[in-house]
Length: 129
Image 1: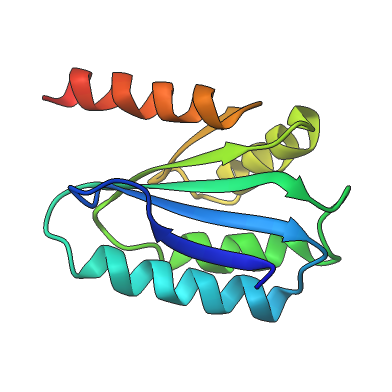
Image 2 (image 1 turned 90 degrees about the horizontal axis):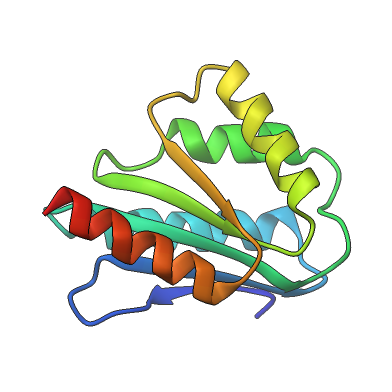
């Protein structure tokens, strides 16, 4: 499946949403729905890694409205969304637009690699502990 989601760790604090090759908005929304259900089953804070490292060069048309819709319905226990991708300027542009549209209740962080993303979350959980 071009978009998949599963727990990355055993305590179930980090969801890994992986985008591979070409994907559609229907596939994104199906995985986002699954991620919400998994997060809502947990009573403590969770993180969502959106991993675009193996994805297509650009996201499908309509990205802002689709990502905004997903952000508006994010579970209350979603502590942060960490975006992984080699094209940081594109990711930063989306984060800036979502913030301007009022998505300030979510903490967004952008990294270039998977390892940077996991390190960021590890540091966040140390700070929050």
